Length: 213
Image 1 (cartoon, helix red, strand yellow):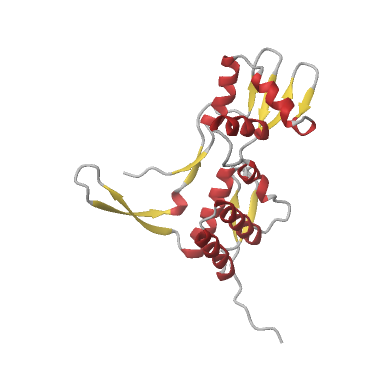
Image 2 (cartoon, one colour):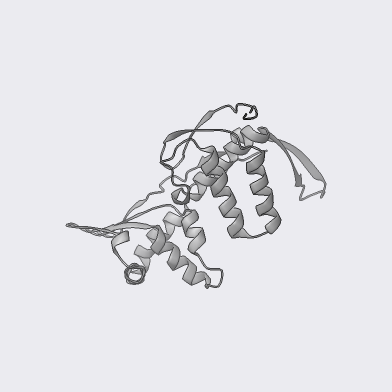
């Protein structure tokens, strides 16, 4: 005979990057256990795997591929899960730069939103007839970036992973149909001014942010 279980409530959230509305439940003790074990490991990869597993468990939509969600989507969803699971209000302290004393602050997590920079574009025109369409960094990218790489290598690997397509007047070249080396060579062949346009995409990525007095 199965033991009784407490029914958990369902809520709705809108995924920032796509505008898709999904239902979710608060995380339970089993999810908190997954998170605590990952935190104890102090391993970034295990922590990312734990966050992915918790979101998979709590989101009521089998079509959502958590690994493909933008990092700011992951942060936003996890914040919503945390607020409904452990409470919307959290207490923080900040160090005063003048008197060095600690200033207490109560923050409502529901006030924290994804902030978009004006002019941020995924479709970037590089010339009159050539452009690129970018996609947002995801957990997949985090797992592929090697800590042994140099900063420059990581930048170009991120560019290759975040490219969705290249287009000209006649054809759209999907990134999945190209090798990483071919994509690298495309970016390396760009004039500096055009390459800066791509860099702006990364410098203006949406971020989870909330300003307080």
